[in-house]
Each structure stands twice: as C-alpha cells, then as structure tokens.
Image (cartoon, rainbow over all chains, first blue to last red; front, side):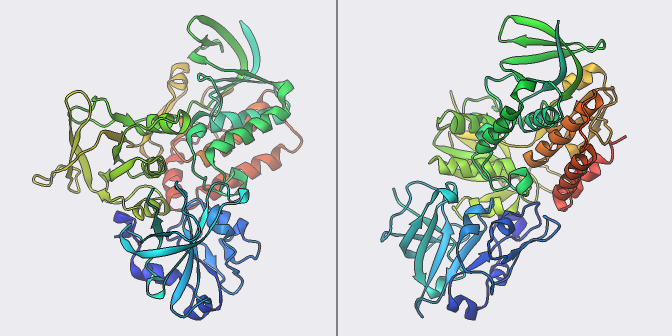
Amino acid sequence: MFEKTGIPSREMVTDKFPSTDRINKGPVAVVECYREIPCNPCQTACRFNAINVGEDINNIPVLNADKCTGCAVCLSKCPGLAIMVVDGSKSETSVRIKIPYEFLPLPEEGDVVKGLDREGKYIADVKVLNVSNPGSFDRTPVVTIEADRKYLYVLRNIKVEA
Amino acid sequence: MKEAELVIIGGGPAGLCAAVSAAKSGARVCIVERNKALGGQLVKQTHMFFGSEKQYASTRGIDITGILLGELDKYKENIEILTETTVVGMYEDGAITVLHREDNYYKIKPKAVVVATGAFEKALAFPNNDLPGIYGAGAVQTLMNVHGVKPGNRVLMVGAGNIGLIVSYQLLQAGVEVAAILDAAPKIGGYLVHASKIRRMGVPILTSHTVKEAIGENYLEKAVVCQVDEKFQPVEGTEKEFDVDVMCISVGLTPLNELLAMRGCQMKYVPQLSGFVPLRNENYETTIENIFAAGDTTGVEEASSAMVEGYLAGLCAAAKIGCRPDNFGERKNDYVKQLNDLRSGPVGRHILAGIEQIVI
C-alpha cells in the first residue's frame, strides 16, 4: 500500500524507532527512509557517525542509536525530510518531537498548533517548545513540539493556522 | 563565421558542468544558451537535491547554479557565454547556425560540440486540455519560483513522478491548495520520501487514476477524473469531480535532441530513457565524430546524473580536440564511478537497461 499512498504502515514506522529505553534516555533520530534511492547526505551530515549508508549510496540508512545525540543536524540535511528526533527523557507522560517544517508562517515558541499524523489527519493540539532556523539549516527550520506520549508513533507533522 | 574551439549547446546542469570540466582541461569553451540567464531548470528547483556530496546533495537546485557559475568564473579567460542565443541548425560541414534574439543570425564553426539541450514535457490528451489554467509542471515552477506568481488557488496535480510530487510540495509552500495528485500507474513513480512529505500535508495521492475531461467556460473550473484498469482503460462509473482552477500536467519528459537528429547522429527509441536518444560511446561521443551529448538529451534522469554526464562529456570533448589533462584517467574514472553509484539502485537499474541499448 505504501507504494500507492505514500503512507507507511504502523509496523514500518515502529521498526524505524529506536527502543523505548533509548528514547527515554534522551533525544534520538528516527530515520524514515524506507526505499532505496541514490542519496547519502544524512551520513555525511552526522558528526557522530551515527548514520551509516555505506559504500553504495542507494542503501537504506541505518541509525546507530547509541552514537546518535539527537542534535537534529540531519533533519535539515535530508532532501526527503524523512528524519525526526524524539525525546522521552523529560517526562513520563509526554514526548518531545523535532520535525523539519518548511512552511510559512513559522510557529513561535509557546504556540499551540495542530498535530498531524502521516496522512495529514488532525491528531491533537501540541505545544511548540522551540523553532530553530539557523543559517546552517539552509531554510529547513526545525520545530520542537511536546505531545502526549501515546502519540509518539503517530505524530509527524503540524499545521500552523495563519 | 565565428570560430570556436568547443561549443556547448545549453546552459543547464549538464551544459554548465561540461563547460567547467572542459575549461578546467584548458579548452576554450563557448556556451550557447537560449534563455537570458544560465542555469536551465536549476533556477526553479527550490528543493534540496539527492545524490552524494560530489553532486551537491542536500543543496537546493537554485543554489547549485551559483556554485557552478562560481566554478566557471575560475576559468573565465577560457569561457565565452552567449545568452538569448538559440542554436537553430547543425550541418555536415561542421557549422552550426545560431539566432541571437530576433534578428542576429550567424554561423559558428567549432572543433567539437557538446549538445546538452535537456528535455521537454510530455502532454496529456483529454477534452478541453487547452483551457487556461492547465499548465505543464515546468510552467507552474517558472511562475511560482522564478517570478513569484501564484498560478491559481486550487490545483489538481496530474502525475506522481518526482516532478509532480516536488511541484505539489512547492505549491503548498506557496500557499496554494493541492486537491489531489493523480497518476495512471498503479504505483507512485517518484521517490516515496517525496510522496510521504506531501501525504502528511493531507494531500491524497490517487494511483490508477486519469483525467477524463476538463470543464470550464473561459478558464478551468472543474476537472473530472476516473479510475483506470490495469490496461489503463477508464473504468465506468468511477468518475470524481474536483473544483480546481489549475491543473498541472506532470506526466514525464522526453529528450530534446532534434539538433542531433538533424546533424545525422544515429538515434534510437529507448523507452527506459523516455524517447529517442543518440547512440554514443562511453565518452558520450555520438556516431558523428566530435559531436558529444550529455544530460537529459541522452536519456531522462535526475539532474544529479545530468551534471556528472556533463563533467564527463566536457572532459572527453576537450581531450578529443587536444586538451587532455595529465589526470585525464583519474578524472574520467571518478565521473564514471559517480554515475555508477547514482545508477546502482532500483531506479538506476531501469536507466542502465536503457543505456545498454545505446552505448556502442
């Protein structure tokens, strides 16, 4: 179905997530690259060698969750905007999620925006904790949201009302 | 008659890279470009490119032009740039005829030519497909990303290849609603990371669907679409209507190479390369000596491979006319390896099956 809709199945998504233990230790990337394409900037961007594509640039990137610091540099470098960062270390009931967001208006810290799933469906209101848009991110801002932990595997986008 | 050493026809990604590569080898290069500015399609590609570092992966297409022009500038004493100049003919005596603007028509006699004329968009036949509001994807990108003009308010995108997916995303970024993306194929043709990016913005992708007709008095008001079966035949009773003022047709490209055909280069129809393409050797030289080709004109692919083909063809064309650098072998191997890397995945294997049919 993924090839017809562009929506990955629940198993495809959860397979890409690091363990709950790892997520609870601190921020870590989730690399949602499901199909082989000739592309490796995620590997090049990572200073910690936490993402490995290998010699053949068509390989699907593999994350080493122990090396990943959740710095989010790869989020802005992935041409497919396929990477996010999740962090379950700050609270037992909520998670922090960083997503690339290339739309205007950008949300502001403290805003409450609509959290969407991988189909673009509204899931829940989420709080914006941070918007990071340094020059090095090259016009791919990274937005940090806080959401109920039950939406960890579901939230993937936001909608900001103008 | 103007004399020139190496003429490069087309200042897009392949042509610019061919120019950089040939000038780096010491050849005197003359780029002939029909538009006012160099860059070709790069100037409207606001998204980040795929590939690896050597093909400027993760850099936006709009910024790659600047990078390549910066490279060209290093060899500026060896480079002449003719803009607003269209090559209109290539002849047996080696002369090419060009038209500068509307009225200045003259001949150039080069030692060698690299044809990097790119590709053009395919059309789709359906009733009323000439209504205002029905655009090719390239035109929508030009309006939006070059001139800052919204093409309309609500768009139906026809084609879920990379261009259809990317332009849909860019429309959303410009604040235009995308009602849906259609594709007659049973699967999404473009990279699925692009598809997922659009899908999570709430845009449905309808595979096995085509346009039945466009409706509107003076401009597009409605699009009627329907499902198609596995033989691409419309399935009755599956019609759906979309109230849209723009339909964006993105059903693929086909190589633009009439000049090569006119010159007498042997051409072959290769479906995997999206149309008629010239037979060529591993140096991208066609069946006519000293006529080289690179980029989409030799088969439709991504801009990343067009750039590397340009580097390779520019290197080989320069060598052919006496500018062979000491590190020729090293540079050639590097470009060949880059092309192999880009083509070693599932999409690339399809391209390679096409290339096998044209390399002599």
